[in-house]
Image 1 (spheres, one colour):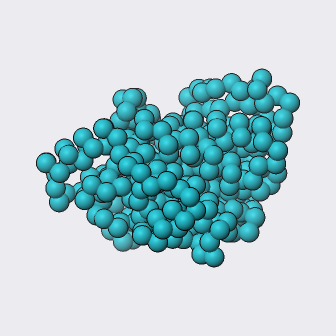
Image 2 (image 1 turned 90 degrees about the vertical axis):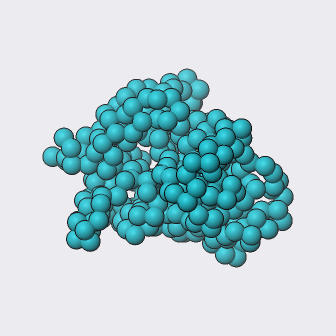
Length: 330
């Protein structure tokens, strides 16, 4: 049997009454407990909007968390962590499994909802990714407001860093990742303010296809969260989708990918990569795997025995909080 165990922690929301008369062939999943708001918003948009596109579902859902100052401490959107120079640089991307089209931004400044800009790149740019000043210019040309995206909390965090930790590295990688399956079609999206107090211009795995996300209707969709500088060495999201295309379930595909990453780390005499993977296949099954033995929510203080993620299915109308234990632990 599989060495990976998943625990159903509880029902976050019972939305069966709200969605009882609407489409039942849709599954949305997101990384970390704070994805609840995104998953609920995406689910509501799916059920209330006539024929919404998959990228609209993910962008609407992701935007709820991006634009909420309270979720900034999770390294996402408004009130996220600045870089070492005190500037806020965002990475985001969306990918459609139907045609493998991508829209992405990297090191975007001044826009608290970078996922919406990534969607604009998908539909209104001849390119797949824009970065830095070019991404900001594109955003302003498309009518996105450029503003101060900091909060009192994020400014205080930077002041503390500058006073005590200048020149040192600070860890933190709670990227919001979302995947969706509807009618056999899949999509993936990610958004983050990046590693706290990173070097200016640093870009992690999140906006890079195959690394932080991947979608292909031949297999499904996957998103990754964790140590971005290590994740991009392995392209795990692409690998997971290929395993699903070859018949593995989302959980099996995520677990097999982590096993492969461990083999590579051992061969290269490197430490294990800290990450979580969440995936859906074209049949609407959702699964995950992780190398984390525990995750502690820095905002609420709650500890989870592994990697927590959120799943909603239109068949049940229920938003579930699940925790998958460290791959290899029974």
